[in-house]
Image (cartoon, rainbow, N blue to C red; front, side, top):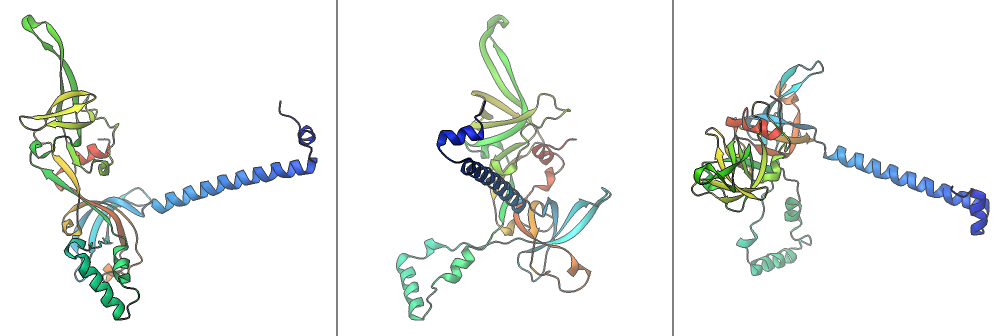
Length: 308
């Protein structure tokens, strides 16, 4: 049993009031620390949560407004009814300076010229541009064949892993196993972590199929991968895509592109100054992925884990 407050005070040679004050201060401090941590966590989560996170279609580039696109997406109203929304999306992109094109001597000469001209800030303007926020832009590229995959690369497959005994003479098993991943419905490569794959997703219409995270062992003469410590031969469904997600540029965002985006409400003025279109919402993209529109109803639901 824990000692009483009076016994504790006597043992420490302190007055009862001082012991009580110490314990009360510790309790308040612990409470405030917990509350501060909880508030900080909530603040961080709310700061990271985008105002708009959806799939959309790029309708057009807004004329005379660099980096602005007119987008259309679907949202549900208060009654749960889907409606189409048209808005403007600004995709910031900061062009990086080509340091390799400028030698050290030329850089020193430029800095000296700036000082002679009385420019105490030097490259302040360039530094401000370099530190400006830029959206993360990713592009899904369709690979034509498994031979375009690199040996040693980590990839993901949605297929059916199986293992069969290898028969010997007279039909007696030799003790070996033939490992396969059969009929892969989609193959993902490139920036694999950027797909946010629903790892536990299963399809009722495809019993035994699941996401397999593997390493490429060979691409010539058929795709072979290492999965769960064993080599597996892979068969890919005829209509299945091989999609590589790669870093891209704003130039890859074109009219009629299907995109996946995360954006916040923008303080920028509307790129359209008059008419009803001027009242549309304006968003600032923090992340945008250019998808392959041909597989919106097949591969991407498997990646997201949509129930169908």
